[in-house]
Length: 577
Image 1 (cartoon, rainbow, N blue to C red):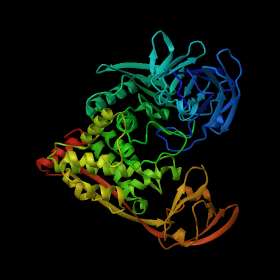
Image 2: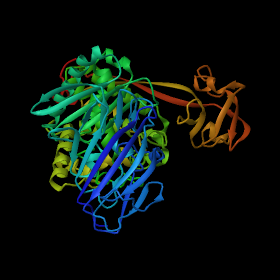
Image 3: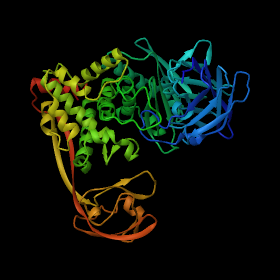
Image 4: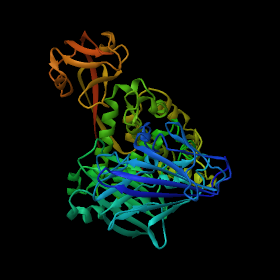
């Protein structure tokens, strides 16, 4: 199809009582006899098919004189309009605000506040995503709007974007929110608050601005013209966390976090802010322009998420919100999590990245292994390896900067393998053996030795406990559903399968199971499980196996060499505690 010349969106707060928006999409400069509109099946940054089309209804299509045009829905996500020769077509629909916690992945609306996330709310013109866009929000009297898109001069509720991908990647905050603005190195920043205690907003915003300053310092400049932090403080809803966008981020947090704007609570803010570089601009080639209709498999999500998480505590330290002790503790927790996870013996880091769509485990990995967690550990070890090989002149941040320059020059994302090629080129050394072990094998990482080279003394303690050989599927609250069965483990030997739902253990209800019924059990103890499979209740007897867990404590090497001390200072952002 010939793309439209321009696409104009209108989002109207149509009915507060029924929490409903009315969305109109006007495609102009059409030449073909038919134009198709589609709603994305997934949201960039969250690799789960969410079924957002269920919130759309009341469809209509009109020409430039408001004449109704033939409209048909060809599949769950696609609506086709016969233009009958019209050069412009307006496709309209009702949008149900289905989110229950101030908005995140889905639209939200109440009598004081609204939230419109692009992929879950705005359809695009098929074969026309590159057309320039304008969006106007029609709001109740007294309401404001904030967005990372470009404001249109003289129209406070109207924004523009060069294409659909940019438009949709900037959610809009609507209503009577609090906004605090600051210019940092000539770049406008805004912190927008909804919920929680307003008397604590100013102090929280100051810490956020410090993180923004640190991020610009680390990366050597801002790649955006403006940036907005959206904070939703609410105990409602099922999700707490953040989601990155091109020029903004949205974070839903518990209101209690506002009491203490320190490194512990603000590291997630640093993580999402780093995404403005790593994944939004330093991105795998498959992640933009987006194919919104099907899963997009990427081997490098470990780099996009895990390495981002690795740099997050560095920003909090550089922002003056944390110390080197905090940085070491953060890394120790991640090492403990990885080395206590038996899935690391079964799933490689590249596999957990590329297969995330298959797990539907809250978009964090596959087979029980998180690419956030192992990706962070690999990022730490890679940073040390680079610094060790280059007399501390090149670190992992230099790899990100080089990849950023490549993406900016080409206008495209980096190809598979480019991370490894870039790291080896900057190190002037072949790093293939490091990447082979870290990404494509289940061999143990050389943690203790590598940390020592970075001036870090790692003390590891190993404990043993009883195990069922099961990983839980936590997608259904209050249900003990098996997600993973360890091969040759106790559950596997007893015939249990993924998808089985445990009803009781030795006659105890599932609450005891999920609440820690095994704290007094020992390896070798026998349990009787009652479970349900395909609606049929069955029983199994199994013997608990042994599971080892390794916990780490990290501290600076007591008598470091000059090289070790320099590397640790570069890693953690501060040379002292």
